[in-house]
Image (tube, rainbow, N blue to C red; front, top):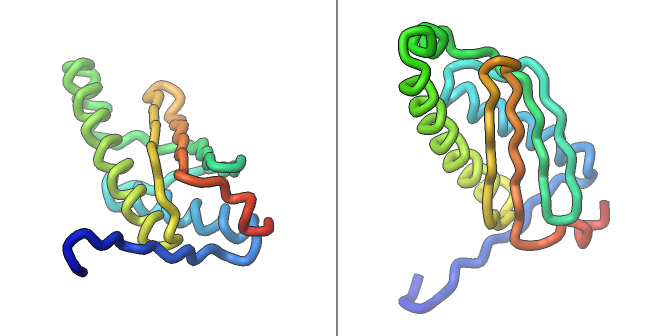
Length: 131
């Protein structure tokens, strides 16, 4: 690529919104298996204009349960580090797989309920795809 040129990302989206949601679920679960070594047990994906929302039920990593019992502050720090890494990998994977540009990913996890919420904000609305 020449200096000053801009990389063009080509969108490669599935034909239907339902297929897109299924692919998002697969990608999200794959990232969780890679980072946390455990997949999700349930998940729901919603798409609204330029936002993707993922609500997922996770199985808590056993070693974090042990750390939490000994030092809840340390387990919270480790949780945050793992969440940040998963957001980074998820953003990269979604950009590479679908050609969508991501502005921001917000994610939180509640260890008591083992539920996470992920909000992905895109650079543009997906309405133009024709779903």
